[in-house]
Length: 320
Image 1 (spheres, rainbow, N blue to C red):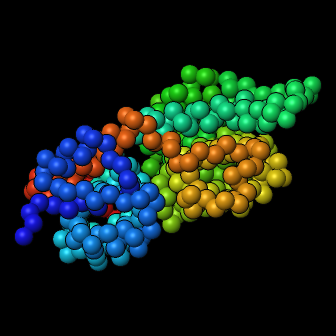
Image 2: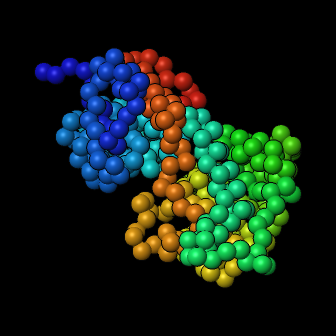
């Protein structure tokens, strides 16, 4: 009879320090191909009779929760848990954890890089040069100083974006249901509508839930000043992609920068992939060497602690 614990990793890679933590706790790691389906995650969980799932790139649904009676913990390799059935896991007494704060700085860096690239027209101007053209006598790029940036959500990432943006003289406002009064010189907006109407660029930093599904839709974008920008490094489902495409085509939205999509990876003929006023990156805003170590270590710690009877810090536990 085998001893130790079996851990399904819904990715092909886990940072070495995280591997060391799991192996020291007696865990065997069973890797999967990138972006497995819910059915594939469940099949692998059933095959090894997993005690834990360390999920990075695959959904953990009731199929996986049903697959192994040994399952005791689902640890998210990151912060968002929209691809985990948290409520059902909680109901069954299966612990769900996340690596809170593990990649906040690098996502903020990516967000700022996207904002700068949009304001300075890097993509469309690069296309002009590539086609043999040169500067339009009437063309101009945007000032950063005085640009109005609206943050939807105001957690760790958004606070870091605000601090970076203010160095450039950008005027930052934020809206979150839990945010009241002033916060680090950021103007707090009482409603999403007020934020949208007063922002030259809107950056999304809220969780993806039923309430935020297609939060940025045709009506929302119509409220924004003509030619403004949309930046999404949160979750794809927060933006209505069909409405965004229409707003870009009409000129209502001047540009968009997307690190996330509703379906990942997006289909080959997805119109936003090649739109001349859209910057796309493949869900990498939180993926650097440092953040991969941070996320992996925090997730591995939670699994090791849970399986060996130690206490998991309350701030890492997710309750649905």
